[in-house]
Image (tube, rainbow, N blue to C red):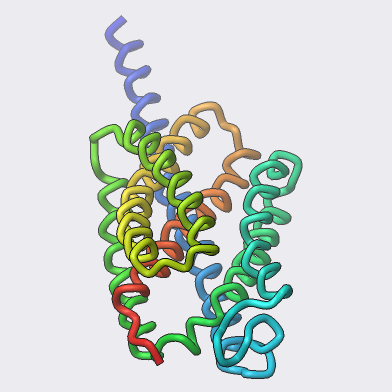
Length: 246
């Protein structure tokens, strides 16, 4: 009996070590995909934002107000995110990655105007601050023993309210409301960074125990998308505070 229990404990330990190694590889893949997406976004944004002829296709060169094509570019990433979430179960892992990279390119197109509105140095400084903050928050979400699921529900409700306020302010153009939106936006996406990291970790452990390899192959891309959205939104809201206007 003792020998059986010892053997069973050894198998459980080996299985646990296998899951731990798989989790580290999974998270490395998530961060790797996210990093490639960020580089793609930065490349497209810089190429369009520093080329007046290209930027003028989407925005007025003087006022930076979007034209019809500009509005399409602004809302296209949102449409892709919703479509991606609805269709990912019918996609292969390779197709999911291609959609993610296409989304990252569209996001770069939609934020390309920042290279005209803000100085390059302030953009770089904001990106550095966002990177450091994101790394700390994601590390907290990965290592903390505290259950953040309740926080996630609260943050998602706040995010819905934030989106509604942003849509309303598109028509009001209120600087005070925009300031409040930026403050709340930074706090929401800071919290979501920690929550999403913990959620990605927990979901991997749950599915790895059932050897759900097909899900695991696609979940890294979904995880990368979630963390990418946290990073890019935190960056854009911080830019409202730290960005020096041209």
